[in-house]
Structure formats: C-alpha cells, structure tokens
Length: 325
Image 1: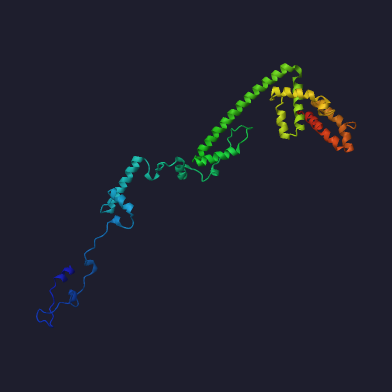
Image 2 (image 1 turned 180 degrees about the horizontal axis):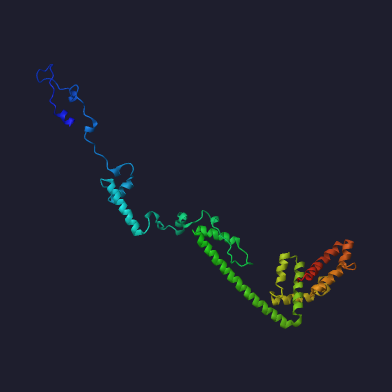
C-alpha cells in the first residue's frame, strides 16, 4: 500500500548547511514534489459499533436482547432467532402473544381491571351507555320502575358488568315479577270466589243487591272525604263483588243501612241511591230533571246552593244508570 511506501522512504538529504548527511528531513516526512497523497480508501477502517448499540435501541431493549441471546454479530442471524421464538410462542399458546390479555395486577380489583380493558369487554363510557329494554314478557299491568332501572345502570357501571350480563339480569327480573304477578292473580281469584260464595250463602238472593249497596255507600263516603277520582276508584274497587274483601263489603253494607236514614247524609239523598239498579237510576234522573224535579227547579232559579247539594246525587245516579256502581 502507499502508506507503507511512504513509511519506507529514506530520509532526504539537503544540499545546504550540515554537509553530507547533515541536512534535516522535511517536516512531516512530506513526499517529494509531484507525488500523489494517499486516498481515503487506502486508510485502515475504523472499528464499527455493534448493531444493537445504535440509537434505535434503548437500554431496556439491549438488556432484553442480551438476556435472549440475540446479541450476535450478524443482525440477520438475530432476526432468524426472533422469528423462531415468535413462531414457537404462537404454536404453544395457540394465538398471537400480542392478543393475550394481562391478568389483574396484585391487589387490583377485578372491576377496575375490567374498566381498564373496557374495549375488550364492550363496557360503555358511563352508566347511561347501558341500554335496557323492557322485556316483551313483562306483565301488562305491572308498572316499570324507572328509578330501579337507573340504579341497575349505575350498579352495572361501577362493577364493570358487561351489557349482555345486565340484559340477562333484567330478563331474570322480568320472569320473577311475572311469576309473582301470576301467582298473586291466581290467589286473588281463588279468594274472591270464596268470598263471593260465602256472601251468597250468608245473604242468599239479596247478595248482589247488598254488595252493590255497599259499593255505593263507599263511593258516597269517599266523595264526602274529598278523595280524587283515582282514589275514589281504588276505594270502590275494594267493594267489588268480584275482587273485594268480604269483611269490607259487610262493613259498608252496614254503613249503607245507616245511610238510609235521611239524617245521615241529608234528606232525600241516601235512601234514593243505595241499592238502586241502573233502570231505577235512570228513572230518578228523569224525575229530577222534569219540571217538577228538584234539579230542574234549582237550575231554573239559579240556586247554586241547591245545585251543589244535588251534584253528588246526580253524579252517582248517572254512574249507576251507565252500569257502574
């Protein structure tokens, strides 16, 4: 090589002072004029860094590569080993290692772990994200508790419950309520039938008329107590001949007898309605509205006091005439 050539060149002797052999060599052992300097390619190569020592790898990477026996001179050899390692892992696990879900950390609540992996479990971002549909087999007359529904959503969100699990629980709840409702209706029907049989046996042919009278008495008392329409309907329901309670019916039948006295509710009111049939009610309404009737006279005279007094009676008769009780 040229480097060796220059190194082996003799020391040049100058012709100046110093005499033969006394001339100092040129500084730096420069080559003679016209000689070509060595090119870069002729220089010995500098020692290169290992491929895993570059900036592409962190200290943790290098530690892992070293521990895995991958710090070999040829990076292609390392790639072959990595490929074999990944293939063996897939074969042993039966799936890509990257798809494996980490287990909960030590002392980490499962619910917190599930929330952290909400995308995997399909968990919503908040409680309102749960969709709850009323089951198709929900009892027709059973009210749907919206407050309890909100509590169920909050519980599901706080405990990382998957939406499908919540839907399943709602279905179970619906079946349970349906079973309870059916059992209650069966028991009520049996009790009502027994009650009606007992009253019929005790009152004989007058049973229907006395049950109607008891219902009318309950309605009159409820009106005087200032109950609303819905409250009045619930009160009268307890006196129904089909679903009422026998003891309550007996109680209001007794009250009806007392209300037959004009002094109990006012002259001409109680005795005219209790036990009245629809036909009789229509007849009484016609009489009250006739020119000789109290309602007609009060209306013609503009007697608001008398009209207010007759209003409950007119309403009861109208309801009875329409087939109600």
